[in-house]
Length: 190
Image 1 (tube, helix red, strand yellow):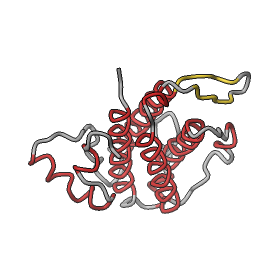
Image 2: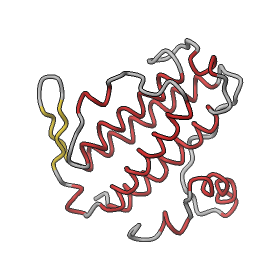
Image 3: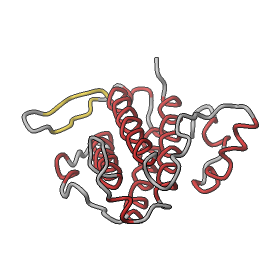
Image 4: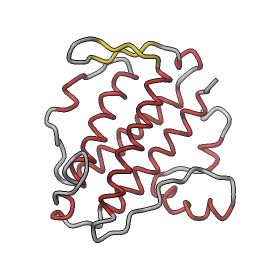
């Protein structure tokens, strides 16, 4: 059975990966962010906005007050990366806080997600798994698009290994995010 601690560590890892990809994207020019590229969404900034708006949808549903299709109006709410970066960090913080405060019963809670033709009902654990997979999928697309830009894509296939050498490699990112190893790995993420 997946536990609250599992989902909280996933939320921290998600925020760290978002931090790394956004840190790389901050080095791009506005022209590179909006340049048409081969991808599901036609640019880096469009894909980053999609990640954020889907976060808004699912996080609001997990919090019990789903904003539905309003999450996608407008489709690109933040054409400027600085604004998108700020809002993604806020969404990541909301997700971490939600996961840290989930009780085991909360993982089985019904989540209601308005769709065009019906209200989708899922459990919180399945909704979280979908949200994390969605993030990984589209961050991977941004990673690929960065391969054709002036900034090298960051390493994104990392997790929080206990190896001290690996911990040293993430120390700067963690300092920028306000994370510590102890915070993430304490048994109950309280």
